[in-house]
Image 1: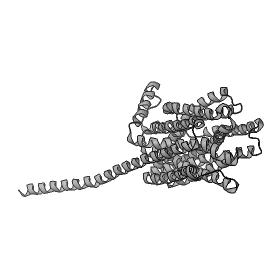
Image 2: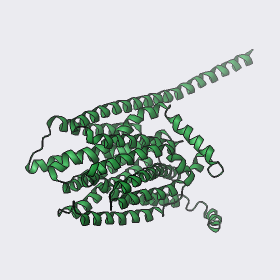
Image 3: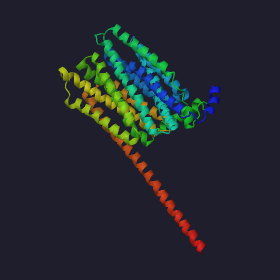
Image 4: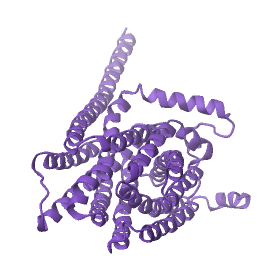
Length: 463
């Protein structure tokens, strides 16, 4: 390390721009690929929980416990991420997903519940670490390459969420292929499936180790190693609480909560009440593969189109409209039918829901990265607290609420969150407009002041 540090200044101006550019792109590719390998296994397993582990609602209850644990640990995840560093937090976070899949090899209350609690902790640090790492990488890339920061954040989020969303396509195709011969209820069929998932997760964990370490705290000018654990906890706790008094965060929280609700609706209600009656248990994999494919395509497209608050507003509006159409269709029109239409309707709805999920994933992460530059850990911790909390609510309430009641709740939540988001964008644009207007006003008054000074000096000289 020392010899490398001594040699690098000798290269001076010849290649400092190209090296960071290459490294930043490499880190985004590695991060995206590692998450794909890990979550193609976890996502497919999660979709099957409510249909495979049906005894005493073990599947849905364990997922509810998981996301409740996720919510709780998200409150302190930013502390852990800052102490460990983003790379170490990402690697440690993968262990919980590995343990959860292993618990599914012998699903009982004694294996699933502890694994779900630990996964809640692991998920909190891996997602806060992911948001912080990706935003830090984007800022470094924009700074080193002299690019627009908002555009780079949008592009990097588009690549990550596009790769991440394709986990639903790949993972569910694997489960569809391995369970399509009627082995979804057999021990041998599910055991082989989860062994394949464990292998995929192991590869993802190994890949995560090749990420470049990033000192995000040094960029913000905050100390890390010299500050004690107690003071770190206090400062980050204050940061987390302070954000709750920030009008921007308060207006964003309803949209964050809705993004969690719509994900849990797909995993719990849509697969159980729409897909399974129409396509069967093995058809869940096919429908979710369509969902994942459109989620990935939309994430990539939305990320490329993101350049600032105006583009985020337009993209979120489109995603909200598409999901509202699906909810109204299910509430007012949809009936279970046979034949080609009976197969096509659930697949079409899965595609539309996937488009909406791709919009909310990319735009929320880009929005937080743009609005909260100086407290990314706290902002992404808030994202996971409210998102995972709303997901936990759906999994706990799912066995006791009808599909129609859930659809009414989803529509109400969508309208409320979208109204809050529009108010946020209007307030932000109004503030920017005032700032732009003040600049020429200040310059005009300064010119007038100078002219008056000159006039006074001339009069004095004449006297």
